[in-house]
Length: 313
Ligand SMILES: [Zn+2]
Image 1 (cartoon, rainbow, N blue to C red):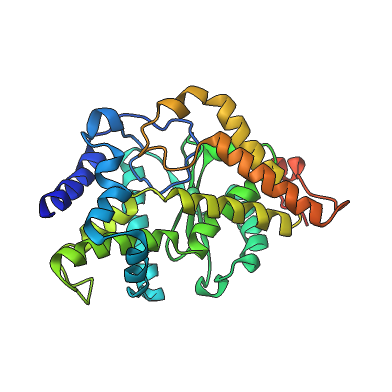
Image 2 (tube, rainbow, N blue to C red):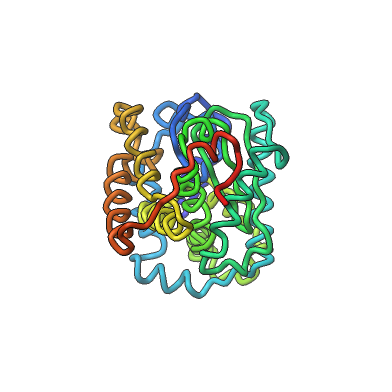
């Protein structure tokens, strides 16, 4: 058991240091900070070694695990601290790759306008006193969120989207991860695995493995279930904000056309999100159902709004 945990922990520095460009141009929106990382070459493990199966070996089955997770409380202050730490690691990583990160400028202001339309739709909106937005100067088609309310959008994504509705759907997806505390669940999972081995640690900051747990939760991709939830929230919130939710589905159709081979070749660990085509179909179907509820409703696509970086009023 201990050996398995050591293997799991060992994987993290390997990921951070052994890097080959792997995700270029691929729409990820998941929390993996290593922008240059070649799974096949650098990591001698397969998904089954440290994914759900691995956790199950440590903490038992899913129901038992969920009950245990529910008993671990993370305060708002700790959530925010966790996010700040993760963000600073992420910013450092970008800096080491000479990728600029800014919270100023026209793009950031525009993204704030869109976030402000979505925030009132979040179930736990009061937990976030504000949402900070950053734009990363990278061609990756990526976006990601950090506990406590930070969102980073890569310039490649801003180039890839063709209208405001699609961008709103993607921002909704990221806000959903925050709203549902998905990343905190990963954090709690890592913590649970550590606690099971170390035996009932109460103050998680006090034990030696804290930074490793934090890093693990940062590195672990979201579960498929979480991605699907986030996709559907993004779709629903875009619709509720007046946008055409089919534009989010369209993003995945275009990605599937653009990267058909990669989808099949990517190792399952990197494929943390469901296949693009599966996401496309799930969002398309959900969109149709939403649109049926208010036939004839004019839905915004906002191609020109996106071009001018001026949100639909
Ligand atoms: Zn996601």
